[in-house]
Length: 259
Image (cartoon, rainbow, N blue to C red; front, side, top):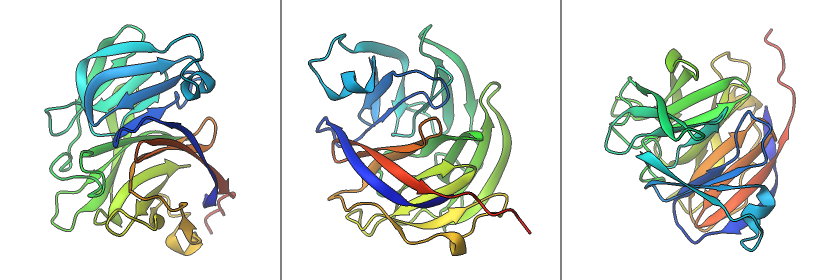
């Protein structure tokens, strides 16, 4: 379970307000992927983190043009597939084969997905996808006027829904969320200006509650995060804030077993 943010490293500056960047959450690959903007169809593939950091490093990044555009900044790469919310649809998730450059599969996420923003401080993300040690997840705002977040576990091979939970975490003042070892952590900020703080956690198994959570603050940034995603392979958070691509190193401890 999360105990704190250990350090921050600005890896690159693109000056683009919105976007996402990531490594494959499962495969042992050094490649880094850059997706600029909240509506686009171009993916930049870098050979390594060093190539991503240093523009002069060879080889040059590979430009991948998708057959469909994405919406928001909730994309993830899982076992060589890019999963994203399809632009122009309220709730369609596409599983895209990056190697073949074809759509592998697609699904419609139910439960009110796509009717409202998942995070008011990330004004283009209606469906946020996440990967942790337990697999693939989706986060979106629920259908009620109270706007609590809904968490859905997705089977990545078939795109079937394993289970869905109405969480107690409200979407108001939320800017991002991520999952770590099956627990949802939601980042909030007042007006998007900070402080950026985790004030709601949700564990479907009930092993982690807000009573277990210390005051977890992110280092102060001038704007809200466009995305924060956990990578279970290197146990770090990949984030985008005001054109900066950031890595947060985490302080964790083992969950206490249920009594």
